[in-house]
Structure formats: C-alpha cells, structure tokens
Image 1 (tube, rainbow, N blue to C red):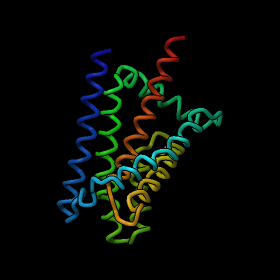
Image 2: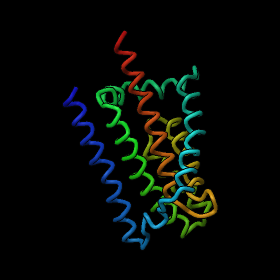
Image 3: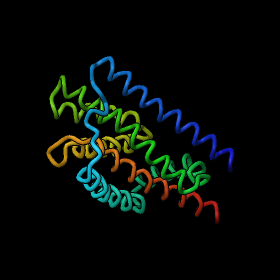
Length: 194
C-alpha cells in the first residue's frame, strides 16, 4: 500500500504541477498573469467555502442515485481511483484536493478564461475555457458534460461579489475534490471489506 500511495502522490504532484507550468508558460506567451486575480481576503474565503455547498449537495445526490449513467461514473471512479485514494491518509487527500484545486484553477480560470475573454468576451471566455475543462476531464461523455457544467459554475464563482478573485474557485474546487476523494476512498474500502 505504501508504494501505491507514494507513487500516486508523486504522479499527482508531477501531473498537476505541469498544469502550473502550462498556465505560466502560456500566460507568458499571451501576456496574461494567471494569478493576477488571486486575492487572499475574508470575502473570497467566505464565498469559496459557501460556494462549495451546492456542488457537494449535487455530488451527494449523484453519488447515491440509481441513474445508470451516474452509477457508471461512480463505479469507474471507485475502480480506477479508489485503490490509490484508499491507500492515502486524510492529510494526503487534503493535499491532493488542494493541489488539484489550485493548479487547475490557475490554468483554467487564471489563464484560459481571461485569454478566451480577450477574443470572445466574457461569455466566450466562460464557454470556451470550460469546453477545454470538459475535454481534459473526459472519462465518458456524461462525465465530461458534468465537468463542463462544474467548470461554468467555477467560472461564475471567479466573479462573485463583483470583483474577480481566483481564491473563490480555488477553494470551491479544492474543498469539493476533498469531499469527492473521501467518498471514493470510503466506497472502495467498503467494497473491499465485503
């Protein structure tokens, strides 16, 4: 289990770290600072924590539903990620959640959304950045659709409160991923305990 955990954490760190390299590399070429809108303030913290609740409620419903497409997604997540997440401790899962939330939001909301906005306006930025987000999260057509809709939610969250703050979608994404990782690990453990 230790080898599985260590290898998985290293792979995640390298993969997610490469997203930061992409964000800053593309940002340098396009003249966009992907963390320009990152502000650490209480308002952003509050919006980020509160904004996690709707996604977690949707996740809880979808994770427990009997709808065939959603059950298939759950099974794929448990089968593919479950062994790795179950080998991790709670601190590891928090690390992974924040790692994914920070790196993916810096790339998709910090670089791609402003880059597409520069050419196609706010709505174009929201739509096109989340088409890319959906494609990168392709597990199945339904999963990609759900990821794209989640990305749109995160894109709206970037501008909540009237002033753009990357902290809000980072927190929502990170906290949501932690909840999802905990659920997938628990499902895998429950399945292997039978």
